[in-house]
Image 1: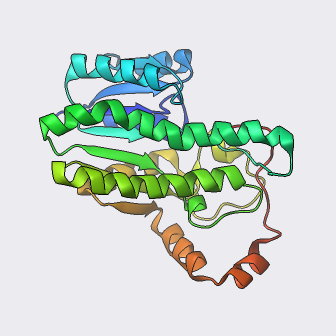
Image 2: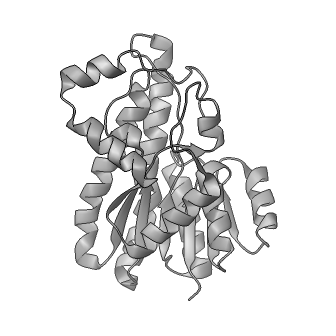
Length: 256
């Protein structure tokens, strides 16, 4: 069966790797991202014929127009992937970081809801067992120092996807939460600290697709990071604080 897949954040990083994976299996794709030239280049590398949408996921009307076009071209998608995301170090004490904080929340949380929203009515009507897949992060499991906005956005994404999963269950629409550990992308390339269990983006895409096909509700990729995350969640606050208060920070001021 030829899958129809709509992917945000497709112009780089995880989204680009997912596009390459699904295109390699004959899927028809909707590729959404902020950089039109990068999308056009990706479409050409994937053989052409895919629909490209240059947009910001914080722009809900643009996503509504993209969804309407995708539905008209291909019909209801089998998979909608909200993979667009940004990351930057932030400190609440710094007034100049507040704009970055809003940008992170708008992209990583609001943008996810804006991605799914225009597709849901068609997916309910189609009853095709579609998947709505959101990219969270292990950073949303416990708050990391210097990453107030990013950790908060990913914690919100996890809770949002869980709520949406309950809402979609009566309609046979599966909501899948994927929490990546460290994946080799431009977003992680600027991290000035060791990244355990770092995965190449193509290998992450393969594991991602396997989890989505299985219809799991939640998965950390790679699985060893899932064990680490569970262990951190179980730590009492006093011990967690002592261990992580001096952890390395992501650089401020550069949104990736």
